[in-house]
Image 1 (tube, rainbow, N blue to C red):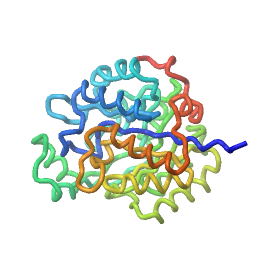
Image 2 (spheres, one colour):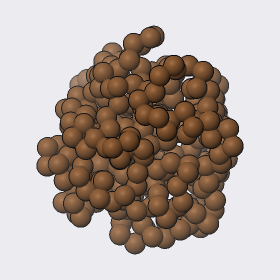
Image 3 (cartoon, rainbow, N blue to C red):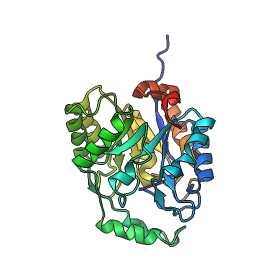
Length: 307
């Protein structure tokens, strides 16, 4: 009997709250645009939709629960994808602001770091919104705060309602921080670990960097974790392809990269999902369904969320 192929969870990060100011006209901003992009990405094969919200008037990232309320019911009604909310928000927000929409399945950054987006200033001549150049310049002097106290605060406030986390780890120390909270009993497996490559201030995108993060996670967590990978900018596909070949899951989307090849802007999130799906299937891998993802990550199910 032929051996069944491994199933790979594909996450799609729909709209940038941190990584991507709107230098592309294709980045969804309004509730209608975000909803349509999310549904299309799910139809293309994304099992998990990682969601930020933006102010439709000026495109600024927002953690206002009312902004998410204009998205979540519509996306849930149209697709069975897992909806992953963010506690990341923006480096300029307080931890309480970032916590507001994260109710059931949320991302959680595992350590403080410099978060340098200012090199983008030299790559683009035009921006979609007037506030973006100043926002990028400010990241020369921005620390994305995620202290032990901050992380404890989020775990304590969300843990009681059964929230499961996507633990975003931008460097090796973040893996050790996560192991610290595991050892204290504040988080339980299976841990969904999203290792992030290519943000200035975090680990790079060299193959040795990917291998180092994987080896460290294997040593710290053994078989207690599910590994996923994202690469920022033009390194999105090389990094995710390498990780998939090593047994990992993948994340793509316009939050992490605006591109669909050299010099070619991606016209939607679904374009990137279809691209990575083609690569995964070419490697003999199977695309995990939302039901597969819920089983692999021990999620409570869409019928037990409050939207």
